[in-house]
Image (cartoon, rainbow, N blue to C red):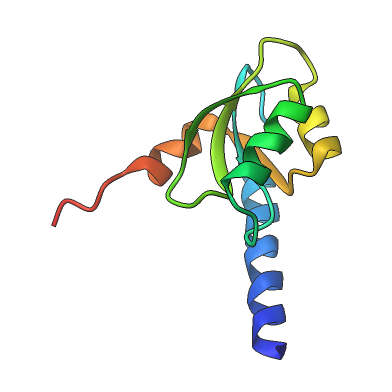
Length: 100
């Protein structure tokens, strides 16, 4: 259990640094990260409760690109349970296929 906790702390620490480096997401499209134990329905519900729409999933069901035309979407996503909200341009890495 200790290694799992350390791994989770390292992951969220990395995501925090990444979100600070990228800056607060602006615009209508964002990359949403929910609890890694969550399934796709939790991700969809989180986005929906924030007044947004699912655009696409990343490689996992707990990472998705979401859209809302209303201001304050990022704040509402956090209030709905999102752990991290980033600029949607980062989704390119989530959607890349392994071309080997």
